[in-house]
Structures are given as structure tokens and as C-alpha cells.
Image (cartoon, rainbow, N blue to C red; front, side, top):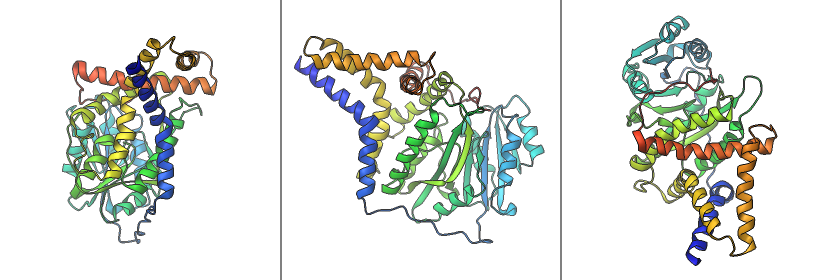
Length: 381
């Protein structure tokens, strides 16, 4: 029983640390650190570099025109901004809508996945481009977003910059994704201050053209770019002032499906893509990778181990009755969240389903691999 008790308390401790301990340690670490976020130099009017904005699109005819129009409204000289829409096997009128909206280049590609569409767009971009920015087709950038991204890339040693994405429901509703992202952005800001971010997002990011890397088509840029840039000697930063917004998946069940698909792309990066290899990491960055990414992806396994060990330990003391009751209470709250829209119940449901999506994504990857193809999540357009 001693071995089971040790396993139980270690797994429970890691769960608590992953959800609560790491953010607390990160916040204290950032507060005690003498390193502060460096302000980028302002980009003088008339000295803006040539930039290409890449928008990968698959079945995006309902939103692509608005995305191109939004790009044209950015605070950037029109003669120094190239907009490329890479249509990844779109069976609808995405390409025609993008041309009508004024995209500079519209690529009509075979369906090969988002990453390969982005690679094709970079290859087709104007040779004058020194910066390549990327965006989702359903995202909307604030006017100064590009200027802030490019400003961060002007800092010495910086190779990758992602901005802040905010999610909202069409009717003001929420599937609790906004709550998750507020915590994620808070952690990202401190990781950026201390070393580099451990993850990005597809809605708003940019790299120097000379530093662009081609990754496995099943390994999206969101997770693969930051750590790969670090391994190549660059910093990967977060620019909170560079803001984008997207429509969130309207239901937590839809969010489960979206995250399950995302995790099927993330697991190849974790298991064979080099994320967990410390080669090329500084000590602070390695700590962040293992605590933020490693523990997060281990969460479903830790929950199962904790629960099974707890069942074995029933009768070994009242503390194990309490811990089992708390675990069952979390599951009950998640079930009730489906019928009773109280915030605590909704948060519990979101946590349980998104944690389960990590395990489901692993199951999908191990069972039949990860297809490079993709499709927009239902309700986000």
C-alpha cells in the first residue's frame, strides 16, 4: 500500500501543480526576475519593411472577404503589404471571394493541410518581404496589430512573435474558452518576459522571412514554431498589444471536438517532434516546457492514475474518502453543467471535457495517425 500511496500523492501533487502551482510559481518568478519586457523600437513612418500576410483558407467563403478587408485596414502602407490567400482544396467559392475582396495573390491548391498551404504561400510571396505574418481566415486584427508584431521582430535575437487573441460568442455567450485563454495569455506574457513562449496561436503571429522553417504537415505552427525557433537560437515572444479576435465554438461539446482535433496534431510534436528534448533549451525555458506543456498533456493520465490509486486506498484513512469524494464531485458538476447553466458547473464541464480531449487526441493519433487536412470548426464562421 505504501507504493500506491506514493503514486497517489505524486500524481495528485502534479495535477495540482499543473493547474495552480505552475501559474503561481511563474508569477512569482517573473516578479522576482530582474529581466523585464523590452520595449520594441518604434517603426518610423516611411521606413516600414515589406510584409506578406498569409491567410490559409479551407471552406471560408463566408468570412474570407471580411478578412481581406480587415487586412487592408491595418496601419501599414498599402504598397508595402502583400495579402496572400492560400486556398487549401476549398470546394466552395473561397478563391473567388478572396479575389473580389482584393487579395494580391490567391493560390488554389490541392487539399494538403494548413501547413503545406502556408509553405506554398511563403514560397509565392514577394521576394521583397522581410516579414511573413500569418492569420486565420475568421480572425479580425486591430489596426495597429501588424505594426506591433513587426516592432517586436526588430528586437535583437527575436525570430517569432505571436499576438493576443480574444474569443467571443455571437450572442455574448461563452463556452468558458475565454476564461482559459485569459489564464493562458497571462502565463504567456510571463514566459515571454523570462525566456520565450512555449506555445502560440494561429490567429496572429509573424516571423522573419529568413527564419521561416518548414515543419511536418501534421505539426501545426502554433506548437511547433516557438520551441523550434528557440532551438535555433532565437527568442519567441508574446506581444499582448497586438490583438486579434475570433468567434469561439458556441458549445463546450464543440470545443471538445476542436481540441481533440488540435491534440491529434499536437501529439506528434510531443512524441516525435522534439518538444520534450532539452537540446537547445536554456534551463528556464526547459522548466517552462516541462511544467506548462509536458504536465498539461499528461493531465488525463494523471487523473486516471489518481482515481484508480484512490479506489485502492479506500479504507486506509478518512483522507482518501475526502479525495475520492472531491473527484466524484468534479465529475458530477461536469454532468450537471450540461443541464444547469451555472458558472461553476460550466467551468467544471469545460475542464473535464477539454482534459478528456487531450486523451482523445492521443487515441486518435495512435489509432490511425493524424491527417494533414483540416476543416473549420462548426459555429466559428
